[in-house]
Image 1 (cartoon, rainbow, N blue to C red):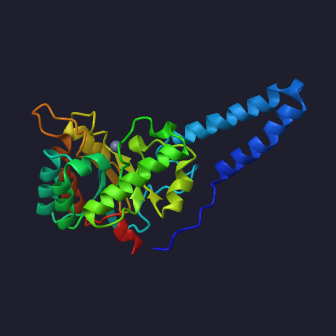
Image 2 (cartoon, rainbow, N blue to C red; image 1 turned 180 degrees about the horizontal axis):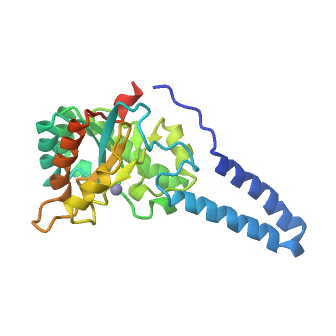
Image 3 (cartoon, rainbow, N blue to C red; image 1 turned 45 degrees about the vertical axis):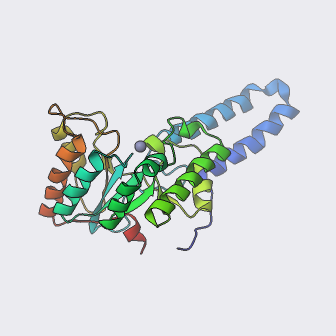
Length: 263
Ligand SMILES: [Zn+2]
């Protein structure tokens, strides 16, 4: 795949200009410090706000929908999980559906047989970082690059395919991420809709959130790792996925992997 040349997003360009103007101003006219300090503060608040909004495009390219509206992508995060992933694979098989698994490198390393099973069933494995650090969005470029590169190495070795998509842990990021992904030919992917199935125990509510205004081109987010349990102890994704796939079939929408949209 042709590696796209990195272009800074408008917000990043604006931030660079802000620093180029404000830092010299602080040195040259120290008595007027409140103005440049206020400008820098606003700039950093804007950057932080954009990083806290998983679906934002202001820090760089971010897939929130598929480029073509004929299909829907089911994306499944935080696995592989030895209990839940096999159940999910079984449901996908029975519905003849395809999914994209955003796997955590360290979990993949502990369960290589699950990565093999995902690939053998015709699904895609993409990167959800090596450790899924909760402070990922606070990392500097060196440690963030390490999280990305270790996951690329682990997942490529286990799946036989280099990941083409990256999803930030919890969807949170900072301005370093976009140039790091671009340099590695990786695309950031978030989602159109999520069901909050790591903390919502009601399969009905998760299903309703995912299917609300469902249409072609949607990217749906579910979790096989860190899955919440229903009152009966069933992983929420296991209760939700058959209903979502039934509704997709009723709507005449096929399921595709994200990478199939690049071909
Ligand atoms: Zn995650």
